[in-house]
Structure formats: C-alpha cells, structure tokens
Image (tube, rainbow, N blue to C red; front, side, top):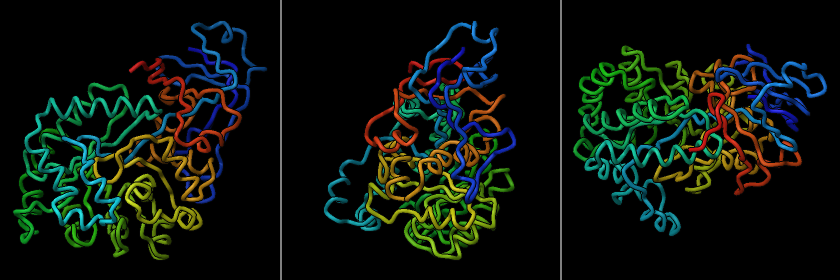
Length: 413
C-alpha cells in the first residue's frame, strides 16, 4: 500500500529513539508533502513527494492523503475495559458532590463492579469488551493494555484475564494484560488485609503464571486501599513469576506510592494527580514512566497531574485513557490528547509524543510501534483534512480520524 500527498507525516522518529523524556517531548519530527510505503504489514519506506522514486510511485493500491495528516496509532497503556456493567447510577452521586471515597463507602466504586463481575460469563464479558475495544480502534488506538481488578476472587480475576487473552487473540492490535487483583479489599477481607494478600500471592499468582495470563502486576497503592508496604509485598511476590510492576500511584494523595514503584523498577507509575517535588525529582532520575490520565481528573473532578513539573524534571511522560466504568467511561485518546493540552498545559507535540511513542514504551513495545519508523508495524491513522497539526487537539469532541490502518490493512471494524 502506498499513501501519497500526505500533508504531514507525524512522528518520524529515528529507530533508536524508544522513549522521550523532559525537553525531548517537544520534538515531534514531521515530514511535509510526504509519501509512505507499507509492505508486509510494516513501514517499508517514506519520503517527500518531490523525491519519490519512479518505481515506488507506480505501486498499487494507492491512497491519496491530500490535505490530511498521517499519525502513528495511539498507544493506550492504561485501561480497564473488561467489566460486567457500566456504573451510571453513581453519576448523579458525583454530580451531587460525593467524593470517590464516599461513593466507595456507600457500596459503589470498585466493589460495585466486583459484585456485578461475579455473575457475568466469559462470553458476556468478551462481547461487551469487544464493542469497547472496537470503538477505541476506530478512534485511532493501535495498542492497548487491559487490567483485571474487578474480580477480587481467584476465579473472577482469572475469568477477566482469560477474556483479555481472548481479546488479544481476536483483535489485530497488541494487547498487554495486567493482573490488578490488588485493586480493593473484598468485603470479607476488609479487616484481614494480609489474608487477601496471601490469597493473591499463594493462590492467584501461581495460576496466572501457569496459564500465562498476564504481562504485568498492578496495585492501587493509596490511602484506604493498599499501603506502600502491602504493595511492595505483592510486587516482590509477582517478580518471582516474571511480572513487572505498573502501579496506580499518587491518585488521591502523595504518600510515597510512586517511590515504591520506582524502587521496584516499575515500567510505569500511573495517575500522579498528587505529586510533590520529591516525586517529580525521583521520576526525573529514573527510567520509570509517569503515565498521566487526564480524562479521569476531568470526569471525577480531582486535580490534574503536574505534567509541566514532570517535564521540567526530565521525566518520561505517557498519556493513557484509564477507560473504566467508574472514573473514566471513555477510551477516546483524541480527547485525552486535547485534555493534555487544555488542562495539563502540554504542547500538542508533547501530548502526541506522550500518547504514541511513550505510550508504546509504557507497554514495552516502542521498538515496534509509536512512531513512523522504517521496520515498525504499520499501525497508523489518516485524519480528515486539517489545517495544522494542532487542529487535532484543538477540535476536542470531534473525531478527526478518517481511516485506520492496522498491520498495513484498512480496518473496517
């Protein structure tokens, strides 16, 4: 497939650039009036139209992208899209001013989803998650990480992970699986935290490993959920099974959660709505990625992450959707990029790099995805005609994605 007359080919990074940190995030190489050749599902070559070789110019099929931009697919490295039912009944509670903690205390929140998960079948979960994932792909997402965490029992957590495995086998994009059994304490373990942790360590982890159901381990490291010490215990146990950490940190308070992740060589620490200088400095000195989830802040009215502080401290910053039924019922990465610009005060170039190359790095697949680079998988999207690169985040609420291409083929969903 040959794409011609591209107004702007976005994210033309060198092969050895696998992530961007600090001031590097503002560098988004763009090739104007370009062509892009795809062969065997990979990016074969690209260049300027005025210099296109004659033999390449004859290749069929061709797509004219005149007036349009070509982006690498969004790489959404933090989602919870396998769930039994939405939670719109909590919507009014949020509007009435109830906090995240108050909704959880009233029987809502994660435990609400866990209760609904118990009776859902794998087929029901797969069908519902497939609809969500298809919508995300049509909006430009070309790689995704999906967490468990609404099971909170051995069998229900395994059920969620098996559904994620089916999604991985069914859809034409990379899907990473994360075990998030440490999402909340089930009611029966409310006064026996160690009992639930023992269940995760002694019963769940061996079965997850035996079926090869997860790539990562996660924990909601937060006041009222899993303490720093409890999180560390789970991460250390999971490391024996080869599961790397990607943890929820500093969402509601700054109590050292991010530092726990960094100390355990976490691939990423996610949320970071509450950070102090120590956190910013620690991330700037580490290889752990700070994954920001601005649509969560938007939806539940909590502070937005300090993206500028992270960038000024030379951290690696990624953006993800946090698609889940309670705090972010949307997987639209275009809106995430818009929010990053509007609320996190990131430049369009910084936001796009964070949602593509660094998002891929947060799933350890930036050698294959996240930029327009020869040899990488041809997961890209073509926009509608746009006046400039900044028009995509500027036009929030509208989809500028016109054509999605995955593995070198047009995706019809």
